[in-house]
Image (cartoon, rainbow over all chains, first blue to last red; front, side, top):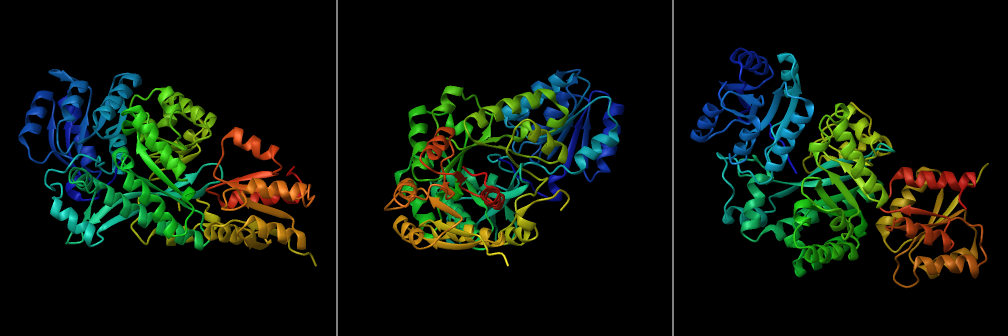
Length: 408
Length: 127
């Protein structure tokens, strides 16, 4: 799961391209696309040295894949150790399969991906693709200048109700209806600044507060869904939960209490667990996921395709929804290999009667492509980013019968 | 003057039944809501309906028992009875239809789902 930040400090960029003239050209072009290009390199080792030395790595690294002193694959591996990790945008002459492998390596290593372009491509085109890119902040990468919150700070946030569920809509492709929202965790600091999950989740987990925080998210989501249903707006809600929380008996007992207090049927609520989480001890996973379904909730596997689950493991778990990671969705319209992979996942999902949600859909072309290969739902900036509390209902009110049309 | 079509919604969850009622009203239907199988059967003895939407998971009589009673005890063999359920696996779908249900409305529902069911009722396409 990823999120955005509009902070200008996050629009700092470094460029690493072997040919200095090309590097300078790209740097100039993206500087005109609201990026602040701080440093331009033609040597990978020089860039790595500067990365090690700086306390504030850039939000974006525009890079090619071959250098005189190394290659992009080595660089991606080393970037995984940088905190906070810059997102990469790859510009390369390599064949598309190689570029895709590099992007996959980045995803596997937890390096955020801003996109890619095959040479020959104009610098202006690269700049235009980066224009709309919002730096991704991975769940667990803490921004260096914004330290993770302490136990006391987190406790205070929980006590004063400072955790907020921001809602990102899900669209059912076939009917173009908005049918649900995923709740994403946010908080406000004392100055009203937004605190993203990367600064919240590691601390919540470390200090044993994750269950409490997850319940707060559930309470807000349940209240939102119940209110929507009363108004005749049929939207469901999803929350993220860790498997460790689900193995906590007390936590699991509280889930149905929260929905029943609101008078809500639990089938309006989906619990999402990540595939990585689902790949731990199988007996443990099956027990805890089956319990969620017994309680009447839906169960989604998040970031599907990012870990190495076997089909037999998947078939042992009572999922009702597969969520395909954005890595498979990004520019899928131009990539037959990704289409094949997503078609395979969607076929599996359809045969198991699951919802198949494509995450990170940002263009109509991507929406059409994921629909073509069998996804049933989409989520992403094309429809909307996550909305602050109080925003979703007025937004829904603008949609006739909740039917979304592009360009709204 | 055409009379509105009449639907009976049977669900012990008020948010669910209210939502269906809002959707049906938007489609020009009139709705009676009851929250148990026994009330549903009593209502069906009293008057006629064009459609029954029946929650499967209710505390006393399950939806499947109610459906059987509608078919066998009340003899309403051609009344469209739709199962309102969270179960969507193909084998469950088959079982529902074999047990006398005319169709399924899978939770969580959308307006288009209810509109489609109503269109099928009107066109006589529900078995």
